[in-house]
Length: 410
Ligand SMILES: Cc1cc2nc3c(=O)[nH]c(=O)nc-3n(C[C@H](O)[C@H](O)[C@H](O)COP(=O)(O)O)c2cc1C
Image 1 (tube, rainbow, N blue to C red):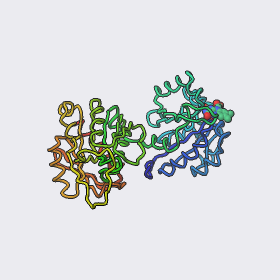
Image 2 (image 1 turned 180 degrees about the vertical axis):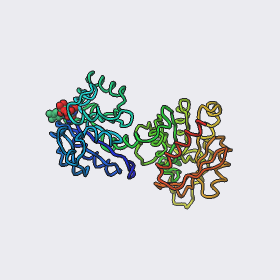
Image 3 (image 1 turned 45 degrees about the vertical axis):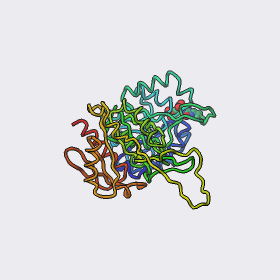
Image 4 (image 1 turned 135 degrees about the vertical axis):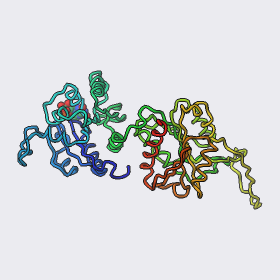
């Protein structure tokens, strides 16, 4: 994840008693590296798993455990850490949240400092994010599931649990999410929810058109821009399906990914999801042509010096096909195209928008974007054009998602 995603945010990181406290050390470090200031508060149980000394060193702040300690009084203030700590926070993150701690939260118990400050937090202003961590039987128990449901109903943001091998040796649901996934979910939590409940279908990456079983024609698209848009849309609350050509990228969190190879496979995948989508973003660099008649066997060099004659046929136009569908024409499906050009960006983007019949076309310069982490975008619609100046692809993707939501609402 790029740096300083949490700049200016102050978090209370609460640890309750569970084996996953060892992961809280890594999480604390990741939050600080992302720019957050972190105040650690631990239950007495948590101190059996990791020491306050470790957490203090990683957060650069003294750790709070005891509600009765008179540290706050020493500087002449009110000696009420449960009030002061909760008022300062942009969010309280409990990681790990033990089964017992969630049960106490649910009942509004306030029998230690961490539970007390969760209860004392201003509900409307200081959100509570919970990362549960426990044995699979404890997680599946109806009492825990009931508690999670009620905590959600009370407004807490309960994160998923991980699946796999547990510290106790059993295998199942209940592990705490990995620190990088919790960080991603916390970053997402602070993003504007401009696409809450919307379904977004995105294509990304290059396509690969086979010549024979070992060779093919592709292009230099890395998929980074499309993956960034998928991440930004998911952060904005959308349910995202990402149809990707062959790329070497990690799937963003909470994104459903469908891998394809050729343009025709990409079209088929897009068509099977477009009926449910509210937005379609065609970001993939789809090959315009494929080789006519892919050879079933490797084409061999025979020593004569003759070269194979390749003939091409045109590929289906995925964006135009979807843009001409009934749902797109009625406005139920908002279509966004991408154009990767080498020159005359505005002119080509305007022409492509008209040709494809889409409300929004995003232009970028191919050689400046393929493989890079930064980009510049030019948004072209019926009203005119708007530049999104150079920034990371994720920053641009978040701006684009906000623009799409705004335009659709208008
Ligand atoms: C070795 C050991 C490991 C434990 N691991 C977990 C755990 O992963 N998740 C959990 O919910 N409880 C776990 N417990 C139980 C809690 O530590 C216990 O319920 C405790 O009261 C929690 O206190 P707290 O919520 O105040 O931190 C474990 C207990 C022991 C002795």
